[in-house]
Length: 436
Ligand code: ACO
Image 1 (cartoon, protein in one colour):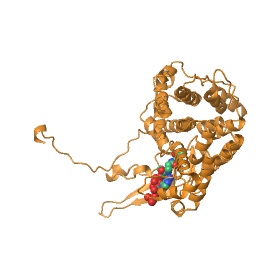
Image 2 (cartoon, rainbow, N blue to C red):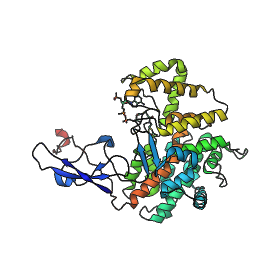
Image 3 (cartoon, rainbow, N blue to C red):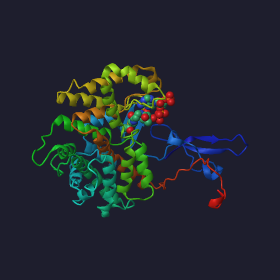
Image 4 (cartoon, rainbow, N blue to C red):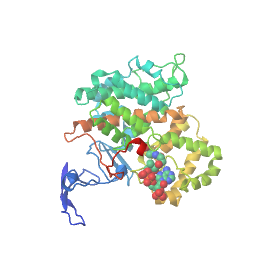
């Protein structure tokens, strides 16, 4: 870490001695005040629910400037990666820090595709779920269950185990998501086909059947690959922080990633694309574009509990750069499928236009996030709404692993253990039950 010449001084109005706190500079972005010795020296904690002002780690992987609407993976802008690279190149970059050259890419692709099949027993584990189980419930179970199948890659402190667990997770996630889908529709599982691209293979496992081969549509495969790239990592968001915290206890990588899957499921996080599309469909049922005014009124009413899903972001206080790319993909996909006049797309665009001009959204810096358009794209591809978050989890797996491995390799890493401001009862005596 790079120390700054400037120090922060914390003083107290009750005359307790003040304390100098070191400041560290990042390569870009805000400096951080190092409070590690605060408790030892003052007996006080800091209070920051939701971690609005807390850097929980130092990292070299992903940088976001929320005010500018900038997202960089290892220094490369997302706009350039989405256009100039594919998902596996992006995975290599996130895991290893540099983009691969031709032979490195070939070797990495071979390694990942050698791990696309899952242990045959996993299908029996999957068959234990109800057919109508939510795919994220299944994914949480299956990813956690991988630790029971791949015993030779469960030691988080062993770099070789971490490496092979990373490749297994990236290779097998598409297979597991497709299996969860096939199970829900009562179709046979389709085994991976390793001469296809990562995204192409996933789409074939989703949509082929033993009686009908899937002919990949290049536009759709490219769109799926872009969805994967845009969701590959996003700094210390809720699910990534969950993976880091869970992994900090030394648990195995599959268990830590399963914790990330569980966290991602929530509607304020990965579940937002599902929630955004459901919202658009509800507004469409209410009367579509005509009813936008009424709907926006509900959103602005604090007592209604209605939110404009796919809008707003904890970090972006500007247009989410991924949303711009997803909007472009949305138009490409709908045009390739001859669905340019899709009423849900028209509704989304009208809603976006109105919200971007409305004082409520402008003053709160609420802009569309990636989820606003990704649901429309996936729906057009024939992906059921309930699977959207599982596809997000598939794409985010590499980010979770890169962040987990970065943490474990950091000599300063410790088990995560936040503290609290306790406001409950102080010590008291238990009285016998008949005296209470
Ligand atoms: N619709 C209406 N009002 C909103 C929305 C929204 N989508 N998002 C925030 N606001 C309002 C809040 O009510 C609050 O208003 P107030 O100041 O009058 O009380 C203000 O904007 C600030 O909102 P916070 O909740 O404090 O912002 P925070 O940064 O904590 O929340 C969050 C970010 C959770 C993403 C929120 O914007 C939200 O719930 N959005 C909808 C869900 C969504 O799309 N999530 C996807 C996130 S991106 C991802 O996971 C890939």
